[in-house]
Length: 270
Image (cartoon, rainbow, N blue to C red; front, side, top):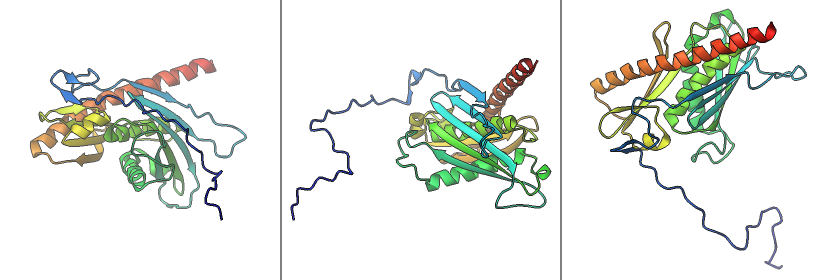
């Protein structure tokens, strides 16, 4: 039997290859400041849009609401389905489910379209962070499902906080009754023991600790805290204080966008 058999199911590479051009290494923290020129207490510009996934009358799986969220290089989309009947049902209150996934091209650590354990863990985090804001008691025996897709990621903690903000906007677009919108932010501890806001992936890799907080600013209630790394009690208290201020600013941006969207719909109806 001949061993010189060509496997036609494979894509044969070119006969000549060229070495790729690699990006220059980025210094996360330097004496001149951050790599992107921001101050330590600055947050990347935020862009939001509700309703980018338009429902179709012919489709039975049309989302009740959706949102698109950008924060620097972070790009996330979220679709809300429900309230609807699900496999699990609670006769007294509804159930909030969240499915989180990275697009295969969104980051360097995502290599396949298959769901990983990291994505399942983040999905549970999002459920715990957002569910306290939903009035689940008015949706008995019903499920509210959120499907979050990360199109591009730039910092794990910053991506999770952006996903929480995107879900909050999508829930409002879906008309789900809420106690308040959840606003989240993340900070990281630099080498000079200073909390830096909204870090990129390079900055998070160089930091000794990262801290994330989600809260409902109107009722002043914290819904979720996440910390990676060691800190002193004073440093943790400082992180909670700065996250409280930043989440209030993010909350104002979300509310302003939702207000402008509602005013635009009212003008178009008239």
